[in-house]
Amino acid sequence: MRFSVAHIDCDLYESVLEAVEFVYPRMTKGGFIIFDDYNSPTCLGAKHAVDSFLVGKPEQLEVLCSPAAVVRVGGGSASAELNKNLGMLLRSSIFRRVVLQR
Image (cartoon, rainbow, N blue to C red; front, side, top):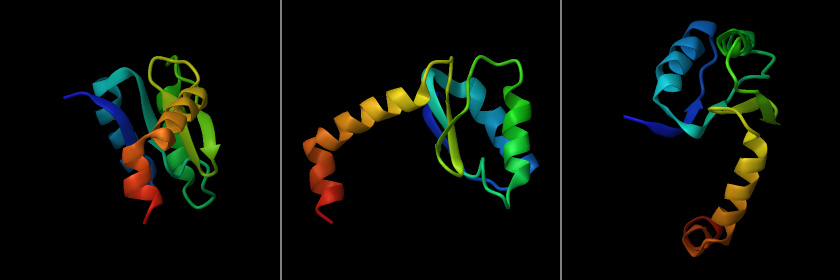
């Protein structure tokens, strides 16, 4: 099983670390791991778990919109790639019909 996107929404050190340890080796190169509570002032364990996990790894953490942050597995700019893909998604007719017309 491989993942191209993983969204980790845990508040505590142990749960964030367990989740990222599970998904990271199963991620495709260029995939995204989103950490929902990375910069949350009430979830300091989440930030600590992510920071300690990423030590020595090529990924660079980027804050999307606080408190969320993202890494692109294998390195590279997560935000630039997400912006490009979001633009394609917004132009797609399926997205406009399903999401924007609600």
